[in-house]
Length: 228
Length: 55
Image (cartoon, rainbow over all chains, first blue to last red):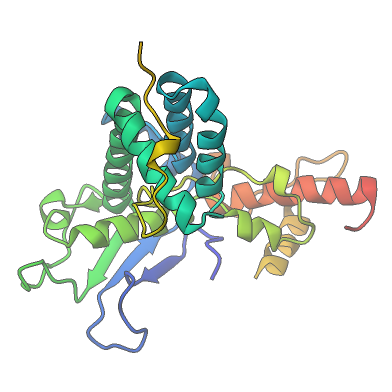
């Protein structure tokens, strides 16, 4: 069901549960209005979080390559980063990326800073979204296995109750709520007359997805730190 | 379904002399955020369709 009306209450179950599992947790979500989204963004920014997408992390990596990798190796390194970002990586490029990342991260702290800022954004944005747009839940258990009763204060979820639900639920439900704020690119492509360039940017809350090293041919000699 | 959203947009859009009307009670900020963005996407696509023909 598309989130057309603010009068709609949608149900959401975090990943990992069968739709017909009678024990599955269910969160009831209201559809945000534009005013609601302004309030959510304000709360996120007031908490000191700024939006950084996966592309920002890769761009920081590119800046790091230009700053700390010797010039004749930079082109290959940037090609590797492009391939990883485009999800067109081979095992070799994945391993190369891991080596590039380790080299850059050692001498270019902005990569870690961007990742940290992105992680903070995901935490704060999810929390604030859950607080504002969950209107009920059922069969939600704390990590201890104890039932967590729904509670609201002043039109928002009681933070003490929200703090008891599993962290991965906060992230999953928060991501679903953000999806209710604007059509995704896929949504827009399914509209009557596709116009990707007109698609409003969707706010991503996906977890950072930098790759880790994978088995493959070692290519460490291809990257070097700039010295002197 | 998107076709329903397009129908809703067609019903709400204004003509040359009209600003149209809002699908839900209240002002512009009280409308669904998703629907507002969807209307914007449809409006741009509709204009392009009228200008360039069907995709």
